[in-house]
Image (cartoon, rainbow, N blue to C red; front, side):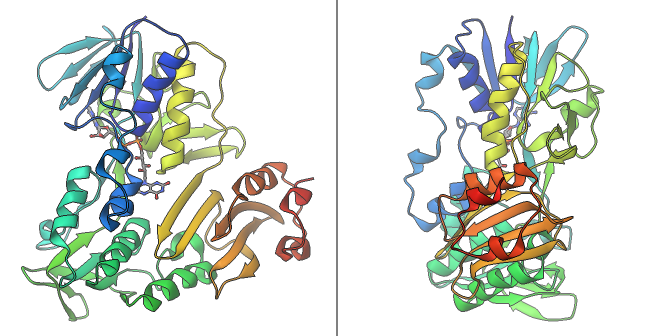
Length: 397
Ligand SMILES: Cc1cc2nc3c(=O)[nH]c(=O)nc-3n(C[C@H](O)[C@H](O)[C@H](O)COP(=O)(O)OP(=O)(O)OC[C@H]3O[C@@H](n4cnc5c(N)ncnc54)[C@H](O)[C@@H]3O)c2cc1C
């Protein structure tokens, strides 16, 4: 059996690690378009930009790990086509790599800013992008961040921490509003305003010039550095061109198999038939890459596995650290335990009287309990949910 993984990111790296940890000793190839070995992206907008993390700390494995584990690591190599009949992957350098089982873990690409001058905006996905922002932003910079989502807000916080003058432009009334709903999104708006960021909400960019961002209402925001964080697109062209089922990502079963039983998908691109939620879900977060890569590897090895992990993600912005477990529509009912104003609380989102998501803010070691509570499907007792006196594990009966 020969195992090939396309995509040298987190999901791909964790998959090859699992193949080797399982005791499999045959051929394993990891193909990555970037010229550096797999690394974790969260520090790119946090620890690396803040100067808190050492550059070496971002890598998933030590440089020698791949050779030590006999993984054929092909960096700077892009897979350009799959031949499912001959079971081979064509690379841009002309090589053909044969597989018996193939994992696609090609991740996402940031959406470009589609306005005149939009190409002037820096995007953030790779280590190189992070270095570019790191070099550009100084304490004297006027930084305009376009996009009030996770990446935009993290970059804004990092730039403010350097002393830069920062404006965030977002299209909704509040940052993160479409994800968190009004009440909790307000916490993030307050956090950023309290730290001196100029939030321009309900605003749309018309143009980026050499020294400014112009909004559609005519406002001109002077800018030395423009960063756009306006979402990502999953890299599904390889799968789609090969005729695999693709719809908002690569469609996979709960064991992460695509419509071709020899091909699997994990990480950002996988649109997973989630057994617990009873619907499809594609999640663009670190935890999904870390967890789904190994599940796909075990499925490729023929093990009976199911991916039933609830979505989980985290962010750090200024002195706010949070973890979010589950998945909820932004307009779901919210129950809060703790104090929003002091930014130390747990928010629960309820649908049909049951907790479907929870977010712990500056409150730690509760994510597993929130996970168990959601899984339990227990009817929510709002009074006990909001009472800090009640241990969360008691609610997951
Ligand atoms: C700046 C930043 C901060 C983030 N912060 C957080 C956070 O705080 N919390 C959180 O939960 N998530 C965070 N994320 C999201 C998280 O990093 C991603 O969900 C995760 O990296 C996805 O892993 P992946 O392996 O699916 O894809 P990726 O990490 O995108 O890796 C895919 C790799 O495949 C390569 N590739 C693509 N096509 C090909 C091809 N045809 N041939 C060969 N190689 C190819 C790409 O070049 C890339 O190296 C952040 C992301 C970014 C960019």
